[in-house]
Amino acid sequence: MSKFPGKLAWQQVLHYTEQLHKDCTYPPETPFPYPWENIGSGYCYGPAFGHWDIVHATLDAIHTRKEHAKNQLLNNFHNQSIDGFLPGVIYKSNNEVNWSSVQTHPPVWPIAVEDYMNKYDDTSILLPSYEAIKKQIAWFENNRNAEEEGFYYTDILNNLWESGVDDGIRFKEIATGKFPCVDATSHVYLLYSYAEKWAIKLNDLENSSIFEGKAKALKEYIQTTLFDEETGFFHDSWAVGKPHQRHLAFEGIWAIVVGAATDSQAQLVIDKNLLNPNRFFTDHPMPTVAINDPDFELRMWRGPSWNSMTYWAARGCMKYERKDAAMAILEKALDATSEQFERTGTIWEFYHPFLGEQTEVKRKPYTEFNQPCKDYLGHNPLIAMAYLWEKCK
Image 1 (cartoon, rainbow, N blue to C red):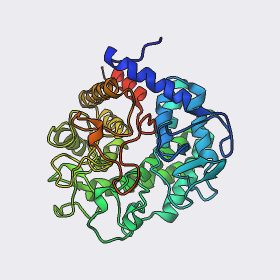
Image 2 (cartoon, rainbow, N blue to C red):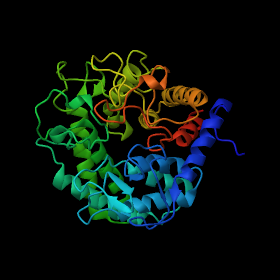
Image 3 (cartoon, rainbow, N blue to C red):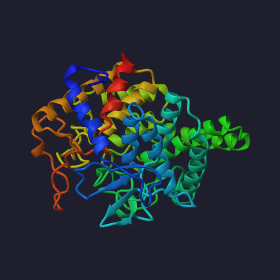
Image 4 (tube, rainbow, N blue to C red):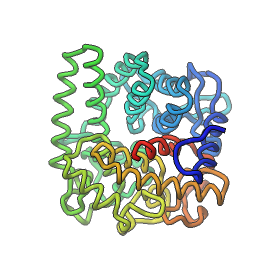
């Protein structure tokens, strides 16, 4: 049995994760031209291919199955509409395929593309990725432009959770409107910055200049408008400087993940928040909501820890030369995940932030599914986390 990076205590859950990836991979079938991977065999809504979730599975596969990783990205592009829309989740049941035609999910896939190309020096995916990113940028510009600068997710309008953060506390007490959201705005900055990079590689200099200008303007907006000096954290436009509307929700990390923060802002995010045991540095980092926030609770996306977001937080630390912070966050999360695996024999959709019993955390109390799903891959890039931890050494 091959050994993954990291501690001996992590090996069992990492091998379990890799086997689960293989078990959840199916032959090509409509609407996937290549073998495709399910979100996880324990997902409560049945077989599904997630635009957001598949990125996390791909980040794992980059280290273990080259062609599989590439295929998942190509499957994702295959289902992009002409106008640039990418489905949030594609559901398959009873030989039927369906997805929402209006709700997308966070566009973090360019990071997986870049990781794949860097690892294998394989640029065969560059052109299809560039075409996909140009179309998705156009879709966001045409459909998610905020009333001010920046971009929004429709959570603010209809609570259908386009952001991927179901029942997010950021949208509990504000009037609806197309206001700039910190996550959506950061994600579009990510699209601009990668589009600029890929345009240069493909010698599309006219478009590279356009994307560079858009990225620069959005970066300045994020730095000057979405950062709150008091909390040392990034927030939605309506919450900055307004304690009665402001929450310490982990979506604020996206500005450092995509590299849109200044260095001083990033250091505050890391030291005042990510490494703070009274906020996000819990026994299993990092909780959806800081534990000192009045609305913290042991309920899906309102308190439990998600390994995918812990991974993104660590990548944000790495971007700002904080290997120490990334290593501490990853190690603590992998330790906790391994302990829960030893207790329960499965990987979970999300986790108890204080390493308590998994039966204590709730999913959606207003539905029949009120426990986190077992054998859930979509938010558990555990193999990628182990490799990133190794990189921090």
